[in-house]
Structure formats: structure tokens, C-alpha cells
Length: 306
Ligand SMILES: [Zn+2]
Ligand SMILES: [Zn+2]
Image (cartoon, rainbow, N blue to C red; front, side, top):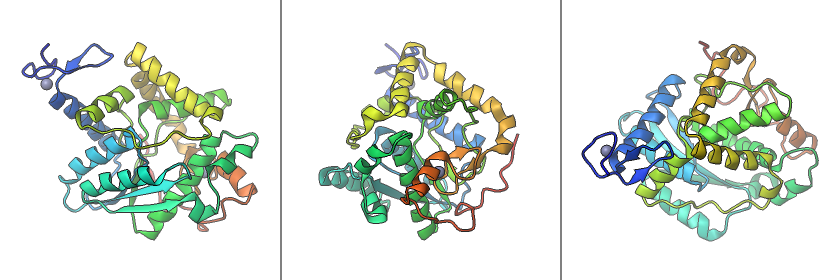
């Protein structure tokens, strides 16, 4: 079968949409989706020092590869990567991730829950009334913001793709909260993978011979967000385009954007300056006040709307 985009090469991948694409066109597809998200949200400036959050997942490895290619077009921008060990990695995984990041000639800054909080992920299991994945995410992002501050990073890039963003919106609906637009424009935390679906990530990874280096989480069974994500991936496979429409609908909620903040402890988008997970973590004494001026490392106070 010929590639539906270039009509020249043999197509190797049939996406759930029925489109058959060759290696080259599939990679171009992912790149163009990333470019679209970056330009729509004005995620980066040409002089940014961007920190890529690499956690060994396929999403984060694909982001690393894509951002490395894009960065070469902006010689005044620079990349650094970070990895936070929540207590789930074996030394073997860490070694492989280090090797992977090194291949791109990018510096990897490592940190861990143990070093910063003197605990690991399993301590979160006993906290009642909260999704352990959300607490873990807040703790991880709290460390990432600190690393950014310590290393003069001007933007953080996280590999949250389409189904991740949709799962956050669904979670908010389930909890009786308003869903929120995906991201602040020119916010400190950028999501360049926002328009990329999981099956595009899988195909991209296959072409580049990447495998996931992220061990599964010991708390996964308790996580609603994890469940929602896998169901949404399945939904998008059976009904291609569903998540893209959902993202579009979320973006249309622009009128909510004026009451949206990034949590000062973890950067999560919400309507409060401190998100509910961080409030729980502060009450438990796990997170201590880190950003006394109440702003993220790079001020996001002036985000534009429209
Ligand atoms: Zn092609
Ligand atoms: Zn928070």
C-alpha cells in the first residue's frame, strides 16, 4: 500500500483513522502537530533555556527526540533534561535513560523523592481522600520547579499529550468541577505534545526503535487518572478523532482562562493558586513552602487571552 500523504513510499503504519503512512510522513505528522501546539500557545521564545521532563515513558522519549530536532532550528535556544525518581526506578532503568539522553548530547539533571522529601512513592498509598497519582505528580512537579529555579531554566516542557489532557478534564468533571482550557498561553510549563495522540507516539517510537523505560507504578491500581487515560486511548482507537475534538472543545472554554492559575507549588492548572493535591501535601508536612513570592520561577502573571 502506498503512503496516503506522499503517495511515493510504501506505507508501514495504518493508523486507527485508516490512514496508511510511511515512516517519513508519520514523523512529519508528529513534528507538525508539535509545531502547531508550540505556535498556538506561544510556548517558547528563541532564547529560552528549555528543560525537558524525561521520565522514561514513550511520550517523554518522543518529546526528547522531537524537541532535539526542533531546537536545531533555533541556535539561541538551549535544552537540558531532568529526571525525577519517585522511588520506582531500578538502577538498570536509570542507566538506560541516562544513556538515551546522552545520545543527544543533552545534560540530564537527576533528583528524587528520597533526596528532597526523604520518602518514596509508596508512602502516598496511605493518604486518604486523594488520588495517589495526583499527589505523586504534584510532588514530582514541585521538584521539577525547584530544579528549574536552581538551573536558570526559562521554560519547562512536559510530555502530556492528548489523552493526558483529556483525562484531566474528565477527572475534573467527575469531581464536579469545571473542565478547564488545556494550558495558559506563554505559561512556564509547556505541553508541546498536546495535539499528539498515543497511537502516533507508538508509531513514532517504533520507527525510532524506542521502548518505554518507565517501570509501572506500585500505586497504579488506586489511580483514577491512570484508568481514565487507558480508557481514553482505547476510545481514540475505536473512534479516531474523539480526543482531538475533545481538546478543541476544551480550547473553546477560553472564557474560563481568566480565572485559571498555575499552582505555585506544582504548576498544575486550576482555579486556585494552590491546587488541592498540594494543599493535602502541605497539611501532611510533605511539601514545605518553596516559592515565597507566590509566583512560578518565570512570571506567568501576564498571560494573554484570545
Ligand atoms: Zn509518505
Ligand atoms: Zn499544586
